[in-house]
Length: 374
Image (cartoon, rainbow, N blue to C red; front, side):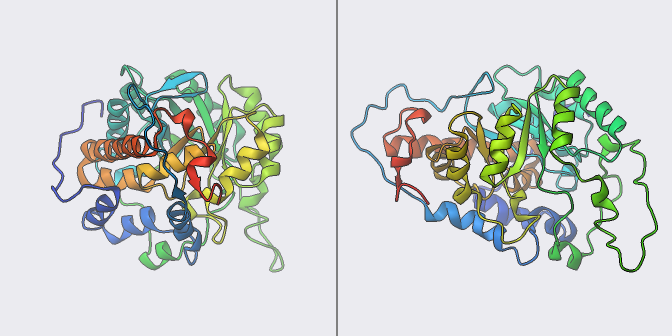
């Protein structure tokens, strides 16, 4: 699994992230398509994420000095070539046989950060061996779901540390899955040979009989739902910075700052958990204001154009995470497809910066937007 994935070709008509999505529909079966593209319930939040970025308008400045411009940003003590990271997406071998390995090769080659899912279908150590030796790579982070067995969680965190991961991204907005109608209609199931390999050896969840009046969810799975105490425990067992992914409320962001966390990621899980949750573009400036610079704020959800990245930076984001589009690129052409998605987005970001009079991203302020705020 350490070999560089075989190169593939993309059709000439694939020139945008939207084109990647359209082409990927012909590459993925109904089972995988429902999983990767679907959202929760009526998919209102899924659509709202995209619509919110579209609603924001850029107000360009002209005749600004642009020579020597760049997309570099600072994040957690590192200089990144650009503010684009690959978000954690599970079971990527459903999209392409090389799965997360191909995504890691592409991220390393394009200087993008990579956040590996707990539910990856490739071992975390294998992904680290691909990313870490590459000069100019972006950050390598490990996304974590705290498991019901604390001993297993501790071992998983230790594996990530030993492999060279540089931060933990704790997903906090999914104590249970959303009501994913598309997956249920498709009869979703993992195909043979695809599994969450990093969870091998996890003891089964203890079960207890419930009376007819009790809730199978609240008295079952949610008995082990993480709380702020678990966040503090995670900090106590790891030397790595911890970022919270799934923050939408200002009070939760403030609590993260009080605990001295490494950052927060404004996310609604791509519209896959709570339907009717607000779009991340609308929530982002509220979180930025609440934290007042005390923590880095990242954002995901619906980003499809370089103009979206520039809008996010103008609203105060430190970086953005990309989810579904790179999986579509993966389905289309493996590592080449993911790299193409990243290249398109970075090129579009540079074009947007130039046309807005921004030589570097610290010049992207709320005044770049018309109206200035959503």
